[in-house]
Length: 218
Image (cartoon, rainbow, N blue to C red; front, side, top):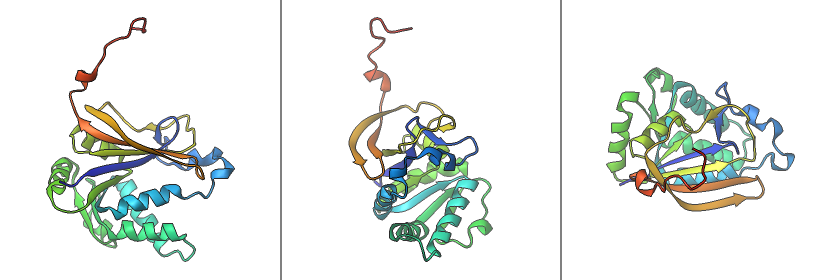
């Protein structure tokens, strides 16, 4: 069975994007020592190399990413790792989950298949049964939240950037019925980024519930 891995960056206070569905504002107060660091790009490229399928979700996010990486591919000044990322993302099989994207919207891109939201769980479940390398979700918070509730996510990789958002959209809308088991951590001193890799295990989370501690507030 193919494993499904979710990889997302988050701020120190657990934000996925700002209230305008952008991340640019998060970097307003980024430490000058970390500007230009590309450790997250290298990590993402490694995940893509070990995957056969990339899941994208939502019209704005999916088309924005495809358009962005097409621009990077054509940019002669792109760094080596970002040029490789562009080739990996544009070349890999992509399943785009959206009810509004049409075939014409993605006609300019290679290896794209559109799946409607109502069919996403079934499509992902069937994709996991096929032979091949991993399935990767980058961004797509609403999608991977739903897949986690359905028990279809195997690993969650969260890379915390040294940024404080203050406001914005959190990683989760509700608590999924899963138990997390730590697989490993990694720190990149050059960027200040900290990775936590978790195995996502379907479990009766109540079995590990220890109840209220003495003196804890009710």
